[in-house]
Amino acid sequence: MANLPRVVILTGAGISAESGLKTFRDSNGLWENHKIEDVATPEAFAGNPDLVYGFYNDRRAQLQLPNVKPNRAHEALASLESVFGNNVLLVTQNVDNLHERAGSKNIIHMHGKLLSSRCINSGRSHTWHSKFDASTPCPCCTPASAMRPDIVWFGEMPMYMDNIILALTKADIFLSIGTSGQVYPAAGFVQVAKDSGARTVELNLQPSDKCALFDESYLGRASMIVPQFIHSLIDEYALTQQNSLL
Ligand code: OAD
Image (cartoon, rainbow, N blue to C red; front, side):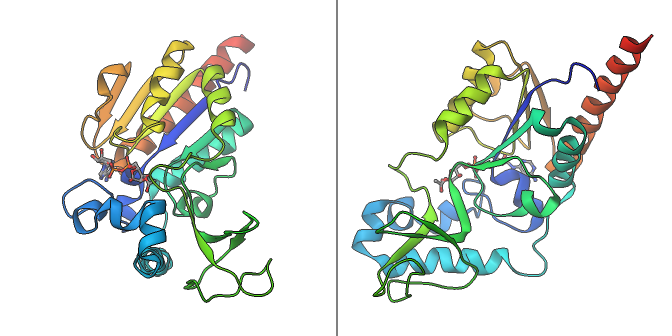
Protein backbone atom coordinates (compact mmCIF):
# COMPACT_ATOMS: atom_id res chain seq x y z
CA MET A 1 0.00 0.00 0.00
CA ALA A 2 1.20 3.49 -0.79
CA ASN A 3 1.80 6.12 1.88
CA LEU A 4 1.49 3.75 4.77
CA PRO A 5 1.24 5.61 8.08
CA ARG A 6 3.74 4.98 10.85
CA VAL A 7 1.81 3.59 13.79
CA VAL A 8 3.06 3.37 17.37
CA ILE A 9 0.87 1.30 19.68
CA LEU A 10 1.14 1.36 23.48
CA THR A 11 -0.54 -1.51 25.29
CA GLY A 12 -1.23 -2.10 28.98
CA ALA A 13 -2.74 -4.75 31.20
CA GLY A 14 -6.29 -4.14 29.88
CA ILE A 15 -5.49 -5.85 26.58
CA SER A 16 -4.64 -9.08 28.41
CA ALA A 17 -7.54 -8.96 30.91
CA GLU A 18 -9.81 -11.08 28.69
CA SER A 19 -6.98 -13.60 28.29
CA GLY A 20 -7.22 -14.37 32.01
CA LEU A 21 -4.45 -12.10 33.39
CA LYS A 22 -5.32 -9.59 36.08
CA THR A 23 -4.79 -5.88 35.53
CA PHE A 24 -3.02 -3.87 38.23
CA ARG A 25 -5.46 -1.17 39.32
CA ASP A 26 -8.95 -2.51 38.55
CA SER A 27 -11.00 -3.96 41.39
CA ASN A 28 -9.32 -7.22 42.50
CA GLY A 29 -6.27 -6.16 40.48
CA LEU A 30 -2.72 -7.15 41.38
CA TRP A 31 -2.05 -3.97 43.38
CA GLU A 32 -5.18 -4.52 45.46
CA ASN A 33 -3.78 -7.82 46.74
CA HIS A 34 -0.09 -6.92 46.92
CA LYS A 35 1.61 -3.69 47.92
CA ILE A 36 3.82 -2.28 45.13
CA GLU A 37 6.51 -1.46 47.68
CA ASP A 38 6.57 -5.10 48.89
CA VAL A 39 7.05 -6.81 45.52
CA ALA A 40 7.93 -4.36 42.74
CA THR A 41 10.85 -2.22 43.90
CA PRO A 42 14.62 -2.80 44.17
CA GLU A 43 14.26 -2.16 47.93
CA ALA A 44 11.69 -4.97 48.24
CA PHE A 45 14.03 -7.36 46.42
CA ALA A 46 16.92 -6.41 48.73
CA GLY A 47 14.77 -6.66 51.87
CA ASN A 48 12.67 -9.77 51.17
CA PRO A 49 13.89 -11.53 48.01
CA ASP A 50 11.85 -14.69 48.68
CA LEU A 51 8.59 -12.71 48.57
CA VAL A 52 9.61 -11.01 45.31
CA TYR A 53 10.80 -14.26 43.67
CA GLY A 54 7.55 -15.91 44.79
CA PHE A 55 5.34 -13.14 43.36
CA TYR A 56 6.96 -13.39 39.91
CA ASN A 57 7.25 -17.22 40.02
CA ASP A 58 3.47 -17.35 40.54
CA ARG A 59 2.79 -14.94 37.70
CA ARG A 60 5.18 -16.82 35.39
CA ALA A 61 3.36 -20.08 36.16
CA GLN A 62 -0.04 -18.44 35.62
CA LEU A 63 1.00 -17.09 32.21
CA GLN A 64 1.73 -20.66 31.11
CA LEU A 65 -1.65 -22.10 32.15
CA PRO A 66 -3.47 -23.65 29.17
CA ASN A 67 -6.43 -21.25 29.47
CA VAL A 68 -4.22 -18.13 29.15
CA LYS A 69 -4.11 -17.36 25.42
CA PRO A 70 -3.98 -14.28 23.17
CA ASN A 71 -7.42 -12.77 22.50
CA ARG A 72 -8.91 -11.04 19.45
CA ALA A 73 -7.29 -7.74 20.38
CA HIS A 74 -3.76 -9.22 20.34
CA GLU A 75 -4.61 -10.94 17.05
CA ALA A 76 -5.88 -7.71 15.48
CA LEU A 77 -2.62 -5.91 16.28
CA ALA A 78 -0.65 -8.77 14.72
CA SER A 79 -2.82 -8.53 11.60
CA LEU A 80 -2.11 -4.77 11.38
CA GLU A 81 1.62 -5.54 11.40
CA SER A 82 1.14 -8.18 8.71
CA VAL A 83 -0.37 -5.48 6.46
CA PHE A 84 1.64 -2.38 7.46
CA GLY A 85 4.92 -4.26 8.16
CA ASN A 86 7.68 -2.38 9.93
CA ASN A 87 5.56 0.78 9.97
CA VAL A 88 3.97 -0.70 13.09
CA LEU A 89 5.85 -0.57 16.39
CA LEU A 90 4.19 -2.23 19.37
CA VAL A 91 5.41 -0.87 22.73
CA THR A 92 4.00 -2.87 25.60
CA GLN A 93 4.07 -2.29 29.33
CA ASN A 94 2.96 -5.89 29.71
CA VAL A 95 5.40 -8.52 30.84
CA ASP A 96 3.35 -11.38 29.35
CA ASN A 97 4.12 -12.91 25.93
CA LEU A 98 0.61 -12.74 24.45
CA HIS A 99 1.54 -10.29 21.67
CA GLU A 100 4.30 -12.63 20.46
CA ARG A 101 1.99 -15.62 20.65
CA ALA A 102 -0.58 -13.75 18.53
CA GLY A 103 2.08 -13.16 15.85
CA SER A 104 3.39 -9.62 16.49
CA LYS A 105 7.12 -9.29 15.82
CA ASN A 106 8.12 -5.65 16.10
CA ILE A 107 7.66 -5.40 19.87
CA ILE A 108 9.37 -3.49 22.65
CA HIS A 109 8.79 -4.78 26.19
CA MET A 110 9.50 -1.57 28.07
CA HIS A 111 8.81 -3.11 31.52
CA GLY A 112 10.64 -6.40 30.88
CA LYS A 113 9.42 -9.98 30.48
CA LEU A 114 8.06 -12.62 32.82
CA LEU A 115 9.59 -15.51 30.86
CA SER A 116 13.09 -14.19 31.40
CA SER A 117 15.62 -13.94 34.22
CA ARG A 118 18.42 -11.40 34.48
CA CYS A 119 21.88 -12.06 35.85
CA ILE A 120 22.67 -9.57 38.58
CA ASN A 121 26.39 -9.63 37.73
CA SER A 122 26.47 -9.53 33.93
CA GLY A 123 23.09 -7.90 33.29
CA ARG A 124 22.39 -10.61 30.70
CA SER A 125 18.83 -11.84 30.17
CA HIS A 126 18.08 -15.57 29.92
CA THR A 127 14.86 -17.12 28.63
CA TRP A 128 13.28 -18.75 31.67
CA HIS A 129 10.02 -20.69 31.96
CA SER A 130 10.26 -22.30 35.40
CA LYS A 131 10.62 -21.10 38.99
CA PHE A 132 13.88 -19.57 40.14
CA ASP A 133 15.28 -17.98 43.28
CA ALA A 134 18.56 -16.89 44.85
CA SER A 135 19.88 -20.48 44.87
CA THR A 136 19.26 -21.13 41.16
CA PRO A 137 22.53 -21.36 39.18
CA CYS A 138 22.83 -18.65 36.55
CA PRO A 139 23.73 -19.92 33.03
CA CYS A 140 26.36 -17.24 32.51
CA CYS A 141 28.12 -17.28 35.90
CA THR A 142 30.04 -19.94 37.75
CA PRO A 143 29.77 -20.51 40.62
CA ALA A 144 26.07 -19.90 41.01
CA SER A 145 25.06 -16.33 41.63
CA ALA A 146 21.69 -14.75 42.01
CA MET A 147 19.40 -13.92 39.15
CA ARG A 148 16.53 -11.46 39.44
CA PRO A 149 13.21 -11.30 37.65
CA ASP A 150 13.74 -9.51 34.30
CA ILE A 151 11.19 -6.87 35.24
CA VAL A 152 11.50 -3.10 35.47
CA TRP A 153 10.56 -2.17 39.01
CA PHE A 154 9.32 1.15 40.34
CA GLY A 155 12.28 3.47 40.66
CA GLU A 156 14.10 1.85 37.68
CA MET A 157 14.36 3.18 34.14
CA PRO A 158 12.11 1.43 31.57
CA MET A 159 13.95 -0.29 28.72
CA TYR A 160 14.63 1.03 25.19
CA MET A 161 13.40 4.56 25.94
CA ASP A 162 15.54 6.18 23.21
CA ASN A 163 14.03 3.92 20.52
CA ILE A 164 10.51 4.53 21.82
CA ILE A 165 10.81 8.33 21.92
CA LEU A 166 12.33 8.39 18.43
CA ALA A 167 9.43 6.31 17.07
CA LEU A 168 6.88 8.54 18.83
CA THR A 169 8.33 11.67 17.27
CA LYS A 170 7.96 10.10 13.80
CA ALA A 171 4.52 8.54 14.34
CA ASP A 172 1.51 9.44 12.20
CA ILE A 173 -0.84 7.55 14.49
CA PHE A 174 -0.49 6.76 18.21
CA LEU A 175 -2.82 4.14 19.70
CA SER A 176 -3.08 3.59 23.44
CA ILE A 177 -4.85 0.37 24.43
CA GLY A 178 -5.86 -0.94 27.87
CA THR A 179 -3.73 1.28 30.05
CA SER A 180 -4.82 3.53 32.92
CA GLY A 181 -2.31 6.28 32.07
CA GLN A 182 -1.09 6.40 35.66
CA VAL A 183 2.50 5.22 35.26
CA TYR A 184 5.22 7.38 33.70
CA PRO A 185 7.03 7.52 31.37
CA ALA A 186 4.42 5.53 29.35
CA ALA A 187 1.66 7.89 30.51
CA GLY A 188 3.52 10.75 28.79
CA PHE A 189 3.82 9.09 25.36
CA VAL A 190 0.53 10.55 24.10
CA GLN A 191 1.86 14.09 24.68
CA VAL A 192 5.11 13.33 22.80
CA ALA A 193 3.17 11.87 19.84
CA LYS A 194 0.66 14.72 19.87
CA ASP A 195 3.40 17.37 19.94
CA SER A 196 4.90 15.68 16.87
CA GLY A 197 1.60 15.92 14.98
CA ALA A 198 0.30 12.35 15.34
CA ARG A 199 -3.38 11.42 15.37
CA THR A 200 -3.91 10.10 18.91
CA VAL A 201 -6.46 7.39 19.69
CA GLU A 202 -7.40 5.74 22.99
CA LEU A 203 -9.07 2.32 23.18
CA ASN A 204 -9.94 1.40 26.75
CA LEU A 205 -12.69 0.08 29.00
CA GLN A 206 -12.97 3.44 30.76
CA PRO A 207 -11.48 6.86 29.99
CA SER A 208 -7.87 6.84 31.21
CA ASP A 209 -6.25 9.59 33.28
CA LYS A 210 -4.90 11.03 30.02
CA CYS A 211 -8.16 10.85 28.02
CA ALA A 212 -8.30 14.62 27.41
CA LEU A 213 -5.11 14.40 25.33
CA PHE A 214 -6.53 11.98 22.76
CA ASP A 215 -8.16 13.11 19.50
CA GLU A 216 -10.42 10.05 19.51
CA SER A 217 -11.57 7.71 22.24
CA TYR A 218 -13.38 4.36 21.92
CA LEU A 219 -14.63 2.69 25.08
CA GLY A 220 -15.35 -1.01 25.52
CA ARG A 221 -13.69 -4.39 25.95
CA ALA A 222 -10.45 -4.70 24.03
CA SER A 223 -11.54 -7.92 22.30
CA MET A 224 -14.41 -5.96 20.71
CA ILE A 225 -13.15 -2.45 20.06
CA VAL A 226 -9.55 -3.20 19.02
CA PRO A 227 -10.47 -5.50 16.06
CA GLN A 228 -13.14 -2.98 14.96
CA PHE A 229 -10.71 -0.06 15.04
CA ILE A 230 -7.85 -1.98 13.39
CA HIS A 231 -10.04 -3.25 10.55
CA SER A 232 -11.34 0.27 9.91
CA LEU A 233 -7.74 1.53 9.83
CA ILE A 234 -6.70 -1.14 7.32
CA ASP A 235 -9.81 -0.36 5.18
CA GLU A 236 -9.07 3.37 5.33
CA TYR A 237 -5.58 2.88 3.91
CA ALA A 238 -6.72 0.31 1.34
CA LEU A 239 -9.09 3.01 0.07
CA THR A 240 -6.27 5.58 -0.04
CA GLN A 241 -4.29 3.09 -2.10
CA GLN A 242 -7.15 2.51 -4.56
CA ASN A 243 -7.67 6.27 -4.96
CA SER A 244 -3.98 6.84 -5.59
CA LEU A 245 -4.13 4.29 -8.45
CA LEU A 246 -7.07 6.02 -10.18
P1 OAD B 1 -3.69 -0.73 34.98
O1 OAD B 1 -4.21 -1.85 35.81
O2 OAD B 1 -3.22 0.50 35.67
O3 OAD B 1 -4.84 -0.28 33.95
C1 OAD B 1 -5.53 -1.19 33.17
C2 OAD B 1 -6.48 -0.43 32.27
O4 OAD B 1 -7.11 -1.40 31.44
C3 OAD B 1 -7.58 0.35 33.00
O5 OAD B 1 -7.67 1.66 32.46
C4 OAD B 1 -8.85 -0.45 32.70
O6 OAD B 1 -9.99 0.38 32.55
C5 OAD B 1 -8.50 -1.10 31.37
N1 OAD B 1 -9.18 -2.38 31.12
C6 OAD B 1 -9.53 -3.35 32.00
N2 OAD B 1 -10.11 -4.38 31.37
C7 OAD B 1 -10.14 -4.06 30.04
C8 OAD B 1 -10.63 -4.72 28.87
N3 OAD B 1 -11.21 -5.91 28.90
N4 OAD B 1 -10.49 -4.07 27.68
C9 OAD B 1 -9.91 -2.84 27.61
N5 OAD B 1 -9.43 -2.19 28.68
C10 OAD B 1 -9.54 -2.78 29.88
O7 OAD B 1 -2.56 -1.34 34.03
P2 OAD B 1 -1.43 -0.59 33.19
O8 OAD B 1 -1.90 0.74 32.73
O9 OAD B 1 -0.91 -1.54 32.19
O10 OAD B 1 4.28 -1.68 35.86
O11 OAD B 1 -0.32 -0.37 34.31
C11 OAD B 1 0.89 0.24 33.94
C12 OAD B 1 2.00 -0.32 34.77
O12 OAD B 1 1.67 -0.23 36.15
C13 OAD B 1 2.28 -1.80 34.57
O13 OAD B 1 3.08 -2.08 33.47
C14 OAD B 1 2.94 -2.20 35.85
C15 OAD B 1 2.03 -1.47 36.80
O14 OAD B 1 2.51 -1.17 38.03
C16 OAD B 1 5.24 -2.34 36.51
O15 OAD B 1 5.05 -3.37 37.14
C17 OAD B 1 6.58 -1.69 36.40
